[in-house]
Image (cartoon, rainbow, N blue to C red; front, top):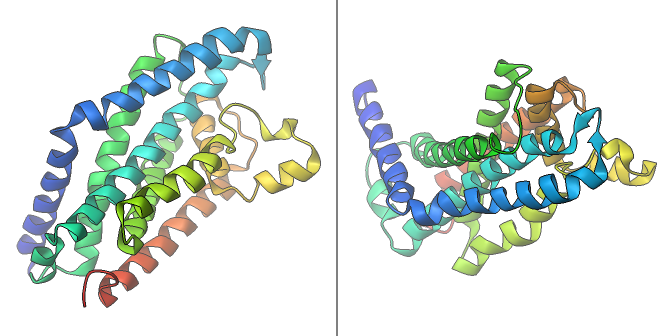
Length: 257
């Protein structure tokens, strides 16, 4: 395929993925916005005043970055996992596989759709947060790079889930029993420096902790984790998952007999 053909193939995949979640925005975009609004009300307005400040900031301001990134993580992941497995289940993925489209472009198309949904939901949640908090941006470059890299990472993770899943139950197991606990234990509602030494050490094994702290740094200028370590973890996982997904695609795992 020449450059123009690659562009057309990538554009087609992106349009397909974006159209897929945009047509049912009442199910893909609205629910996470409502759910996060409840977090703002319950944890920020009701519980926040009892907690007071956190790391020198109002508790509501402290939790907003983590809640925004949580919406990005869950929606990037869910979009790709459900979309790719549905394509497998309906055998529509075979139409792409018999075309000359390279594996890396197929992966990029699905990941692009996941990133689009994750960032769209993140922006919607950010707009809602303005009703509850006076957001201050400390570093735009860090903010933008972390949210994009995180959306890419979890879109790749969703693709892996879609590749390995053999039923719709498999698509929901990982978000329920792995992704959700890691997200809640990633320092959204607290600083890990408050934990006993043992549990603080355990928390450092949670990759989401690094993403949330880096994103919080972009807003507030504070982080429990050195910024360099956060980028290293994020980019390391992106590279690893990219290699895994390309290997699975080249073997046709679960999609070729």
